[in-house]
Image (cartoon, rainbow, N blue to C red; front, top):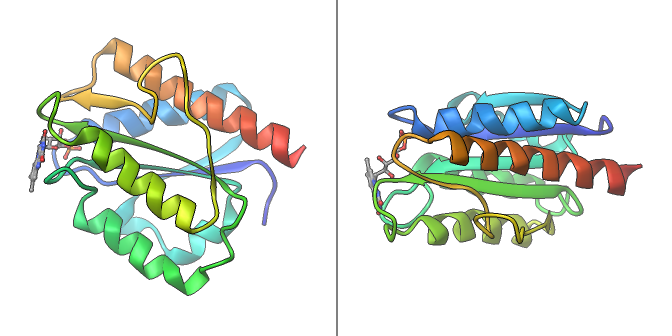
Length: 160
Ligand SMILES: Cc1cc2nc3c(=O)[nH]c(=O)nc-3n(C[C@H](O)[C@H](O)[C@H](O)COP(=O)(O)O)c2cc1C
C-alpha cells in the first residue's frame, strides 16, 4: 500500500454527484496528498487496496446508494479483512431535502464499517457527510472540499 493516498469513487448519471466528487478532490489536493478520482464504472476492486483513504459518493436512489455503488461493495468482499483501518467518508446528492439522503450516506458508511474502516463525523456541517439537493451550490461545494481536507488530515495523522 502506498502511503497517504486517497481514492474518491463516485457514481453520477446527471452530474450532481460528480461535481461534489471534484470538490472533495480539491480538498485532498489542498492538504497535499495524492489522490485518484474515479467513476465507479472505472473502479477495479483491486484499487481499494492501494489507498489509505476511500471516499464514496452516490446519488440517492430510493433512500439508498445506487446499485452501481452497492455492486462495488458486494464485489469488495473478495478483499474482506484487507480494508481494515482505512479511513472512509461518504457524500450524496438527492432531489428532496428529506429524500433519504442521510440513509444513503449511512448505507455507505455501514458497508465501510463492516470492512473495519474508520469514519469521522463532523460538528461543522452535515454530520455524516455532505448532502446536495440537486446541483451543488457554493456552500455544498465548500462542505465537500472540507470532507476531502478532513479525510486527508486524518490519513496524515494516522499514517504519520
Ligand atoms: C432511480 C432513481 C431513484 C431516486 N430516488 C431518490 C430518492 O429516493 N430521494 C431523492 O430525494 N431523490 C431521488 N432520486 C433523485 C436523485 O437522487 C437526484 O436527481 C441526484 O441529484 C442525481 O445525482 P446525479 O446527478 O449525480 O446522477 C432518484 C433518482 C433516480 C434516477
